[in-house]
Length: 182
Image (cartoon, rainbow, N blue to C red; front, side, top):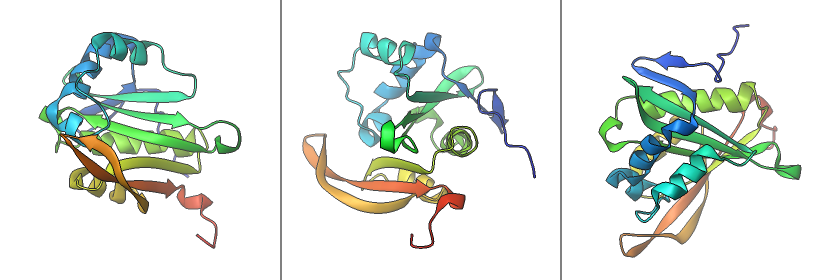
């Protein structure tokens, strides 16, 4: 059996290096999370301050695992796992952001590969969940490629650009953990 990669060490996919998020990279995260397409496709809002982002990046909760995607020395993407507690300690929520200038260059794919490796081979997570707007076709395609399936639709769940937008709730069960009934 091949040894899994070590997500805590940098690993490369083409021109993308994935490594643990560093607190000093909060300014790059601020830039990513304020990019117009990221704002459109995530739950970020344009009024989020630099101080809020600095706090979020430098002082994450203990159940948060974040990785960053780096291209040519610049942080261009983030992916995080927020691991549940108690009876949901086998579940994590996934959040992915890729800077507008780097979308379509494999950053999302490399980020998903790394975070799934972390979830499956290091944290022993069985279920990963995420929420995505129904009109974010690029993200939906990425998530489906990695085994996420739509489990439901939340109507008018997000307010964006002056209107309410539906979201899909998607989940992925670790392939070796699916029960025969699922």
